[in-house]
Image 1 (cartoon, rainbow, N blue to C red):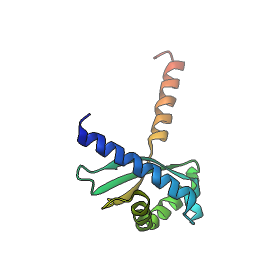
Image 2: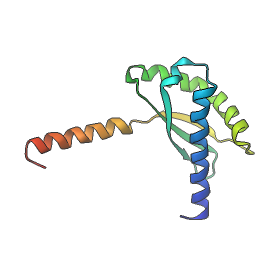
Image 3: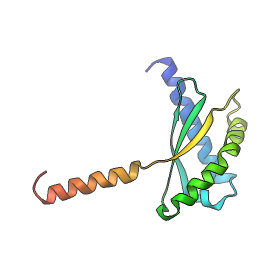
Image 4: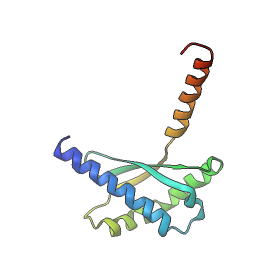
Length: 118
């Protein structure tokens, strides 16, 4: 891993950690209490960050998505305060469907196994 990739990966990890702390400690929106940040992907120039989130309460996913949209500006300002860096990337929140995809694959493998195909 090159020095640039290490720096990017480290900064992604810091953003992930700080956003989860911010969600737990200083967000008043009750809809975000059941959400967690799962992954952060920075653009090569660190100017944009895709922040992925997930929730255990699948029924409230749309409400949580709306809450994250309203939280974006405050998230940036609180990140700037917590990380003490010169510039904070623009943030866009996305639902992380990785768990659902994993469950679908496991279900397919299980059915294939029962049918003797696997």
